[in-house]
Length: 179
Image (cartoon, rainbow, N blue to C red; front, top):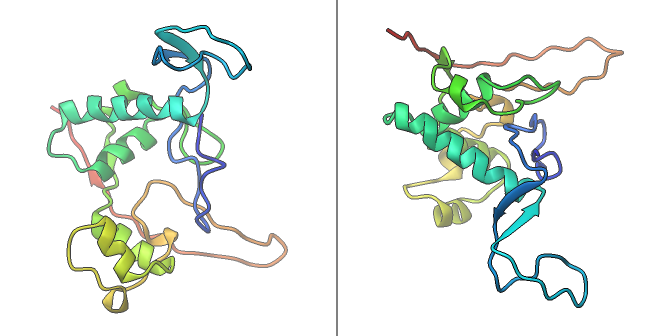
């Protein structure tokens, strides 16, 4: 499953990460019906579901697994490791591979301040950002950036093929040497 229908950010390549989400057996609260069929009174401790909400726990577990090997890594570095060691997709990152993500070779780290500049660039107001983030945020004093400025391992460029085009993507990464 992926977040193709969820992302509305201009220029963002999605999905960032994909994970198993179809026909997942999971625990189920016995007070909830097992189906949406009217009159169905069956109960169970388990149920089979599909969707993005079923894929998210897989990504969270994979991130925790990678973090267990690299405790100082930031969330951005962990996301990068999951994205750059995937089973390839035609666009965005593909299916996560937690075992490969432990030794990604390199990581692109994205910090909170990177996202603040991005959100300011998307038009979010300082007051709103202060509700969701700690710190002294001031969008008027921040260099507003676009999704192309985020230090992510994915790139996208919308273009008209009938005219010349170009764009410069700047990225910073850390090469990881094992052994």
